[in-house]
Length: 318
Ligand SMILES: [Zn+2]
Image 1 (cartoon, protein in one colour):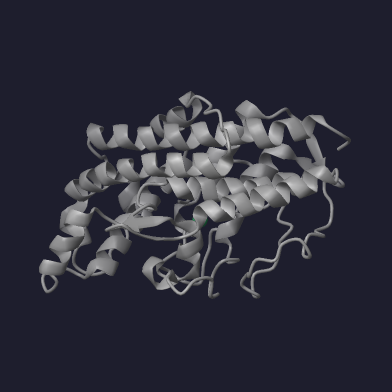
Image 2 (cartoon, protein in one colour):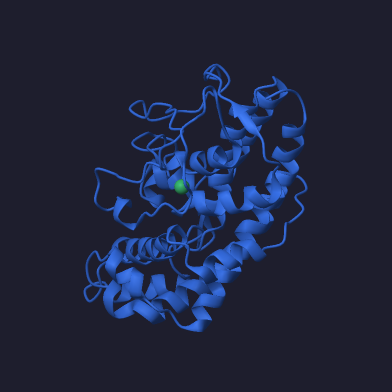
């Protein structure tokens, strides 16, 4: 998804105490053995907006962005908790997972970025590791908190939240329904091919919702605020349970989103521009499904913050 910072910020405001964090240097290289894009460096970005611009126009989000969250520069060596967790919940999209080899099956998800940010299941075949990345960063956060390092505990938690939000985002569990996939194969010459059509529906949905989250559109923001915290048990088990729920929701979202936009999406690449998404008015039935998604995602983020982050902020010094 895009506009991670909006969901995370609203959930953190409601769940976490108001504290400032002492900024500490990164010293976790020896604990984090995952492969990352060597061109993506760890950034200290406090005070700046999330990095939404990209060289590739297919994934550039700059024109959709608005400052829903106001980011302030660190004051001396301390920084705002809510801004930090919001900002860095966008970090996994700043290039760390791009252009690397993480699985022989990453072609099914369009490459390493997709593989780590999705969890597809189509015709019983599963690919993608978003759930594993959430657990990986949760473990790193625990290590940082255990060492009294609240700043990196929060940053790693923010990355874990990114992958949880991705895991639940519509169309991150399958690019389309199985029935639609078969229809595209049968109508290959008349339609733009499954990868193009899947790409269009997925990215246009994210641009529509991302634009309106960043611009503070009320019914979306209200859905996040209304969401009730979900109590989380064992993370590995619960992520699977909620992923399955999101997968069922994806089938309903896909049918509605396609019904709404199919004239535009099935002949060559078409991503809705910011001017288009600004005035798009989906039917109420589709809006209710988007609210259902935000209720689930925000409920789980609130539960995660409450279980894994809030107790660690009470302990120790800044
Ligand atoms: Zn992502």
